[in-house]
Amino acid sequence: MESTGRVVGLGMEILNQSNYRLWKSCMESYLVSEDLWDVVGGNNTTPPRGNAATPEATKEWTRKNAKAEFALKRSISSSIFEHVSRCTSASSIWQALDQLFNKKNEAKLQLLENELANAKQGESSISEFFYQGKEPML
Image: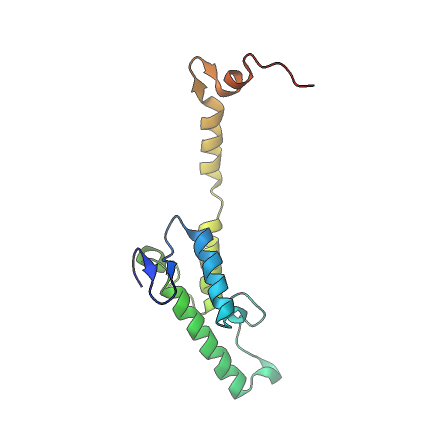
């Protein structure tokens, strides 16, 4: 794992605070191409249970999950790793990263909306500035 730069062997950038969408798209493509997506975001995100839990199926799931976990962990920056260090499966890592980068910060959003509403261009508010001298469109 590197703190910045590219993931050795994958040819993609390390996940950092600003490139989640690009990283997610590339990582999902990589996991699909390596036949690992089922254990991350597909139909087999948990180990086999019941009649399906044969020793061979359990071993296969464990192997695929470990490979997917390794790919995910080695492709994130050290500062982000702390957010997934306690995850117990590739699927839980994927979910933790999704929650981390897709959470909505309502307070920050409200602050930005207030700043935009109060912004000025010269002596006019932004909305007054844009509407000055414009004739209504029919």
